[in-house]
Amino acid sequence: MSRHGLSSYCIFDHLNKKFFILSMKFKKQTYSTAVADHIKRKIQQGELLPGQAIKEVALSQDLGISRAPIREALESLVQEGLVTSEPQKGKRVRIMTPQEIEWSYKVGGILEATGVCDSLHLWKNIEINELVHILDGMYAKSLQARDLAELSDLDNTFHDTLLMHCDNQYLISLARQSCATISKYLMYKQWMSFYSPNEFYKRHLIIVEAMIDRDLNKVMHLIRKHYNDLGSRMALIAKD
Image: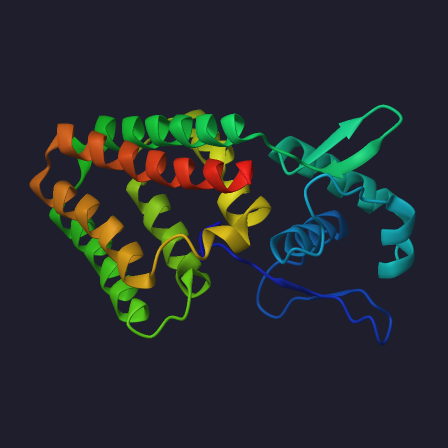
């Protein structure tokens, strides 16, 4: 998720009423959206592990709300690929095999590279400069960052910007769904340790350099390699 477009923040206070939504300048979130974000954070932080059951009743009691928005939130997470639903087993955090992980990143790389290359002719120099500005921010943070968690938002913004001229929303949606759930949620803690902040910056630098040169073949190759390399590392960890 890009850091642009975040409209409000959910705060769950387990010492008081346990659940309320803070909205200062932006449109208030629905309960179901707030619950979905809450579950995502628990997955991201390792409080809910792959294969672990997600109980509607427990969440309802914990958050102090009815089960209806929780049920709606879980259905939305099923659609996103973070949660699975099986008869008699209920809802569980998704488990992915190493092969599924590797395939997901390959697909994500193919889709993003295609979307970028098909629309590269539309990029203006000022928009290339926007990408360079994001990269500059990534470099500045990489000098002080302890891990990739501090670069996560910039990573999202970078990849969203790459597809700014792609008008195929279906392609964009599939590209994001293919692997974002893995690196930013299901295997977030592992993702944070795969590269040093400086290595992370350099992985994005070479893509920007190819974009500046408007070298279609190189852009295609580097974006696909960007995803394939990460997918291979993710899959290797999942085998252990």
